[in-house]
Length: 228
Ligand SMILES: *[C@@H]1O[C@H](CO)[C@@H](O)[C@H](O)[C@H]1NC(C)=O
Ligand SMILES: [Ca+2]
Image (cartoon, rainbow, N blue to C red; front, side, top):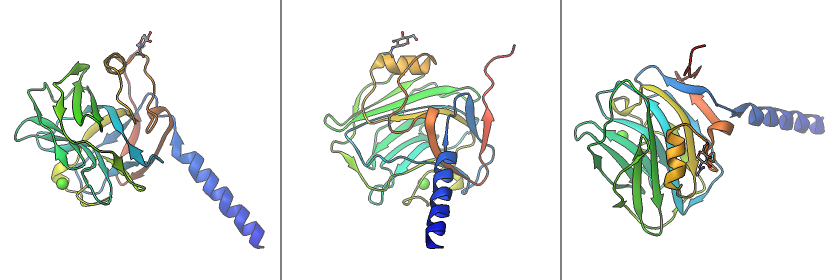
């Protein structure tokens, strides 16, 4: 009896594991409403970062603040955050709660933008590659990001570890091709990502083998790029 239960439990765990891993190529997440509930949680086993590159493509018509990527640990809710500050019209990468500010980017509504953010723990330098064009390199913070419980969320901005969402900072629109690496990608590789050519998929988060959990109203839809 007990063996049978254990076997069943293992089977359930195995199937949910398999079901959660998905090749999302050609798909996108659609965040159709502003709320403080809807989000996608991305799952990774990584526990420390000596460097980070995060790339994603997003499409929105928001005219207010919103988060594009939010990673929290119990000690740093903005462990790694990419935030659009609509008052100052700037993209703000936060690393371990330290904010850098990038103004003057052509962050237009109603079109796709490829955005890559890099950070290196030794130099403390952050950089944004906006549609394949590099920003200046700014000092943020040095020292590794470590945690046994990273919570990575798309669609909401965390003001606590895995929560503290605010509707007025939620993301509404579409997002695709989310990748995360634990190293800084070369400029050529980032240009390739932006141009949708060949690049090495993320070794921390890969859109081609995405482990995630959807909470509330977020859809997986086809990203139609061409008509035949
Ligand atoms: C960029 O893409 C081209 C064409 O697909 C490929 O030949 C090249 O190796 C790629 N470069 C990098 C750095 O991945
Ligand atoms: Ca907030």
